Image (cartoon, rainbow over all chains, first blue to last red; front, top):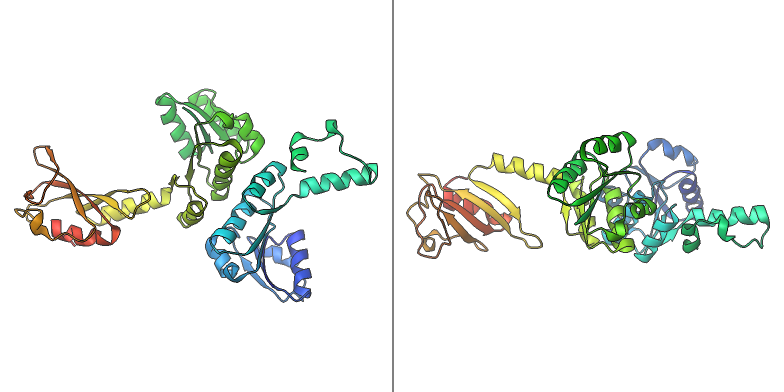
Length: 150
Length: 220
């Protein structure tokens, strides 16, 4: 499959390397050329320097031909705009955005976007690590926002 | 009306100043403490310190009761996020978005934002108007392919002394108004005669602009 990944940090580069070694056709976009140092020398995919939410940069990365577009940069706003450009301008069939803010994650889910929200996932995992696997969320310790997002 | 402006830079602050003068209730959400302080210093306690794309900040600003939200930060991705949360989360009726990079206008349109303002586009078209004499583009009519243009008829123009019928105007073009030298506005009919020093307001399409200017003013 053709996969375009925006954001070549720890997560983006890890996924890029994995998908590349599994035989997928991977293109990585990052605003900072130094980010591509996260990729190993044997990475066979393409790298593009630019803002991943930019219509022209996505075009250069071939999003219009991609099967999957993943927005894994650090900014929620940037990721949200990027997946919507990929979906509505370049007609990418499948898009996923990392959105840190649980409340904004809900908004974009409501708008029909596949959202991964690390905050709620980590919240749960930290609880399990700290209290044991069967620890249920305790109301007085959880912010209202993360409760509604779960 | 209650108007929330996200982004207190030159644009947001200028808008706040005017809207307050017009009697509206205004809140400016600004994430830089010095800028927020300076806004409060000038305009009274209207600035709220925080990131206006964050929903808890929007809630603190009272977005649920806002009539209008103006997203005018310098970052298009933030303006888009503000607009989308304002509509989805707070059911705000009217969102006005500033677009910094005119190329992003496409995505704002695709997502249903019809009230957008692009300073770059405005400046570029102002420059184009100054460069192309004889015709001033007044406005693009919203959601149509038509523009409103103003033309001043020079003394030696080919159209002087002609009736509107005789002019053979470009297609998709209508003369809407003739303002005579004595400041009398007239709605022109087919037999209206064009005089020197008339000012004409026309409805046309961008691709016919040059032809219209040629016919009325003789200037290419």
